[in-house]
Image 1 (cartoon, rainbow, N blue to C red):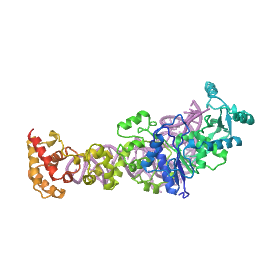
Image 2: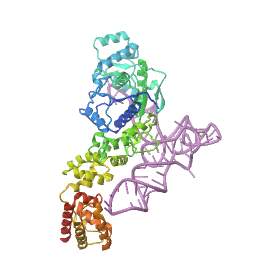
Image 3: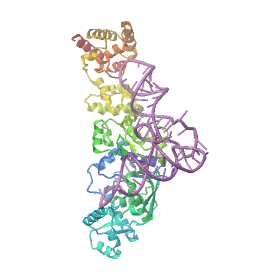
Image 4: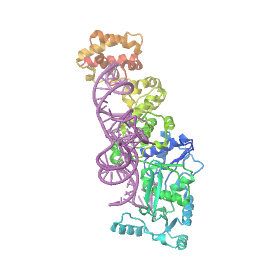
Length: 494
RNA sequence: GCCCCCAUCGUCUAGUGGCCCAGGACGGAGCCCUCUCAAGGCUCAAACAGGGGUUCGAGUCCCCUUGGGGGCACCA
């Protein structure tokens, strides 16, 4: 595989929330960089001041950190090729735009938005295949154009796209992408506000920052020929291009819409990384999940970040769109939870329990964690599975204290007998409590299901819980017996 | 409308001309284990979009159709 250190970059614009697609691009960027001993860079593409969303930058960086994909170079951490925020690099773009104009590969355009609008309408009325700039300013005398620029006339800089021939751009996954130049346009490189468009800014920055591999969404495929033409006009070396496909909604029909996003949230899921933590997902699970949407590993498997780095191969990325499957998220999250050492898991569970209002002491939490580990899909599942350990009393539903096929009287008798057996025991370890209780079940001609079911409700207050005897051990003799006593009283009053 | 991309089980995918009457994972069904719920083990159902080529031989190469996706801004 490729041993040359790769410099990769993730270049989001702070115009919205950080979602799964961005996270996946970041992951692949990160994996490639780590795999080859290179660097992963975060660059903020904030050249569209109209769409700038306050707080978006913070969310991007917070999400990356949470996932464990902290960039080696970024606006926050700096680096040798900064600044890493495009609005802080204006002079650089100006310089390169000038270079292109001097080379004759770009030109100033003085057309007003109104004139362009009118031009577009006319072309649409003529039903042309492709609405494109008519080249009015392209035909201007360069010296005259330069004079008008110097005099301060408002203008943009356009790229001079060849009118004929084809552009061949190469994508690592998709091969050569051939486009007839007549379908291309004289795209704007520099806006009249003095800021560059993505097309110029990204190419300049990737070159300046020595990016070797560009991984980006397939929405860039249509302007891909423009980008390689810009690079070639400069005479620069091209990076390796990889256009990743988009994520589709779970049904596989189209992209996630606002409506789908809301629905996902209602179901306890989200496509935004920043929501994942509070939903009880852990970064290991999320990472494993998104890694496999668009990466064909021979054996689908549960992998840590380290294992992903080891197995990553940029050539095994897939070009086809992938439908989001939240059930798979649950699967990977549960799998990674089961992989966590007790202490680590306990630490992560604690805030969920605390936020739910339980007074959590670490000693009990450490004993409880192994009991609930394989039952958790998300961390907040700890609330129903472990909440009763931290309560003084439980409130069993009277009807649930009666086992199937029995009445209140019989159930009360069972709890009384159990109480006597347990109270007489020297300790409350499950090794001590379970055998005599099983013997009792046998003697009484009952089933374990009936007896343990009643006791479970009496002791935990719920029908579903971790194993009974282990649970009683953690709860302790005193509290367990008190809860049994309370259950007897409830049953007797029925 | 025009341009571009994509196409294997419901979903994510393995497969780079013979090893494939297509393998794995999620989900589904069943069985085992079992004090509930899980976890775990075993088994089953489930796909090469359609049509033409090329070839001794095609899921794998080419073309068309169909379907899906993306794009046609002084947004990224």
